[in-house]
Length: 162
Image 1 (cartoon, one colour):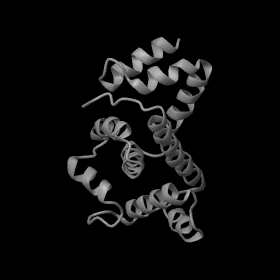
Image 2: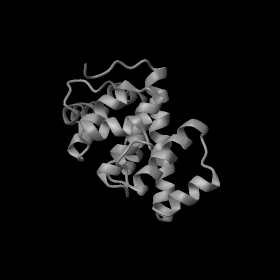
Image 3: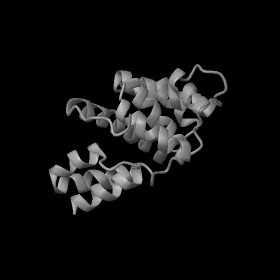
C-alpha cells in the first residue's frame, strides 16, 4: 500500500522518487495517517490553494527548507504564485503590494514559526480576516510544515529536483 502511494505521489510531484514519501512510507500505518492529515490541510483544507501555498512557501523560506521550497514552487505555480509573488513571499509581509489580509497572514506565519506562539495582538489581527475554523487550521497548517521542515532536515533528505 505505501509503495503504491509513494509511486502515485512521486508521479504527481513530477519525480521518479519523492524522497519524503519513500522515506516516511517506511513507517507503515503511521505514513498513511500522516498522509491523510496532511491532505486534509492541503490541498483539501479551508484555505484556497493560493493562500495555502503562500503560507507553505513562507514557512519553507523561514526554515531554509529547500526540499519544501522546490515542491511548493511547482505547486504554487498551479495556484497562481508567479516568480514575482514568490519573491514577495520571500521578502515577507513588508514587501510592497500585499493586501492587508495577506500581510497579516504572513506576519502571523513569521511570528508562529519564530516564537512557536501568536501574541494576542497578532491573533486579533488575524481574526479580522479569518473565522474560528480557519484560525485553528492556520495554526495546524503552519506548524505542520514547520514540523515537516524539521523532519526533512533531521533525516537529511535529498532534494527531488536540482
